[in-house]
Image (cartoon, rainbow over all chains, first blue to last red; front, side, top):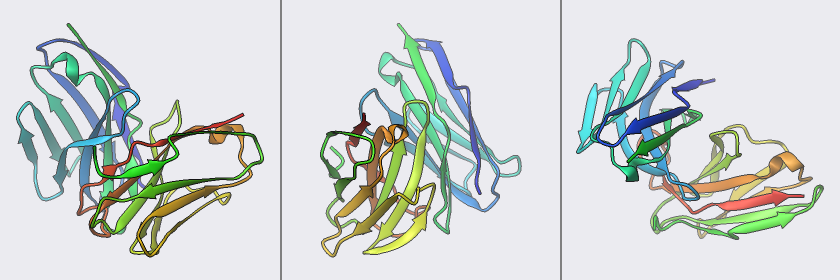
Length: 111
Length: 115
């Protein structure tokens, strides 16, 4: 089955700096890669996603890049703010309904 | 608020017992997904239903079962509970059946504590 590895498990950045989280997947049939943000005690919320036919996608301070050959995708947060502090999960999904999530990255933005 | 509702919010029970968790999807969504989130683990996909039928299975134990009713709400049944079943259980919903085509909207979760 699909195996998604997410690094780092924890990330501490100074406010205003950038944060990068990387995920690698094993199944080349995966074609959809969402990223979720989960604040303490709250539900996961989709923040950005990318499909296998696209290499990069941006939404304001958030961007995701996908390297299909190397089977990895990354989340980039620029100009981090205290409200970016949360746990971020990546996922790799196949068309035949196989879903796999990374273990999560706890991001702390220091003021 | 995602529009997905889950009840109850909290559930405390004893080992060996059986519980039922309930989820109502967003209006118009036909797919329901169930996830388990333990303290030291990420999100584990359990099972997906689409329009009343089971669509995909993940790491769901045999002691667990689910169903989706004609009104599209779903229930997750957990039996012979063990201490290790203590976790946050989320459901999510989406419009279509393909997990690779639609955004999933998560409910607020049910926190299960097994004593």
